[in-house]
Amino acid sequence: MISIHDIFKVGLGPSSSHTVGPMKAAAAFVQLLQEQGQTEHAARIAVEIYGSLALTGTGHSTFDAVLLGLEGSLPHSIDLATLPERLARINNEGYVLLPPHGHKLPFEVARDLVVRVDESLPKHPNGLIFTAYNAAEECICREVYYSVGGGFIVTDAEFGRAHNEAVAVPYPFNNASELFALCQEHGLSVPELVCANEAALGGCDAGAVRRRTLALAQVMFDCVDRGLNTGGILPGGLSVMRRAPKLAQKLQALHDANQINTHLWPLVYAMAVNEENAAGGRVVTAPTNGAAGIVPAVLSYYRRFHPLASEDGIVDFLLTAGVIGILYKTNASISGADVGCQGEVGVACSMAAGAYAAVSGGSLRQIENAAEMAMEHHLGLTCDPVGGLVQIPCIERNGIAAEKAIKLAGLALLEEGGHQKVSLDMVIQTMLQTGRDMKSTYKETSLAGLASTLKKKAVAVSVRVVEC
Image (cartoon, rainbow, N blue to C red; front, side, top):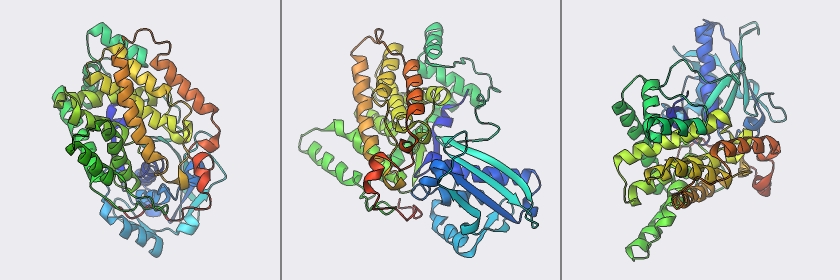
């Protein structure tokens, strides 16, 4: 059983699978070197980057993330202000500092960072191979990593294995049907059941689960606030303006003039978060960076406008959204490179819709129906980022999905929910099969779809300067 904090992870933009995952993979490899006692014997490290990671690596800062990861940096704790200086040193002076004691290792980017745009590793489109050599150019350590979505990484040997079951939880489940049946059997709401499992996973009590969940919510709220108050042009070469601050000002002006347009606030909140993400700022994967705006946007709308809004409701919202994310992660995929944007924005919309129904007093059937409908209407959604950047269509797409989540939750609450023909489990499996049937060019390669419309405006500048 995985935790909701595996679904909601504090990291940095612009991509969980293409930035966060590769950074973690690089850091894991140097940790492996250390564990094997090979750090001091390493004379060179070569990194090979394959498939979707290679094709969109510039726009997603994949290559920069690998360099920083080799120095032991991790997404949740990296000092964003130091990135330009560190990357300049690595690229210009030709070395990285391996942890834990700053072992100076030559690293020539042109030689040691090999980008294989025409090749993919067999198990997943997001593949990396790290190889360490000694002074005689003999391999002393080698590992294959896959970045499988949402910041999760697995080695070649770990790929496809069941998730760690070492910690027993009071209410284990494998799918939505089992989850809702357990709630019914024990007279628990969805967040109550999830809270009990989280306490077991964390070795803590319900109060600690609540505090940790509220802290996570605060990171989301802070990201929304930064996005609403930071203007300018997003990095990457497309000259995309940040729109959220001006849109928020106009909405507030309409409100002040008694022209209430509260239904647009979720869209603007989501755009604010995804503009922060596109600028390389601090965000929460929910369940990925590319879909990071939807859950915070709907949660912010709940906090500001819902008549039943409360601190307990915020906790319940995230516990419910998180467990829906777990269902998709463990039974399908949350990787755009694997199943298209339906696995990112579609999953996030499903999480947010189910959570909003839960905090609005929805029954188990209504929660399931809201989550199911949200995915049903994202089936087949392609991942086709223009220029390999999470800007067009990703920012607006998050806004539309946030608005859709609230509407579908409202629709579910108007009905009993017991007569739907498609269950949440069924739509999860349909999404997975749809992703498997989808052409690879529509899965985060920037080779087809909307991404092909601006081929003459190739992006040559990576997201290196944090503008938040």
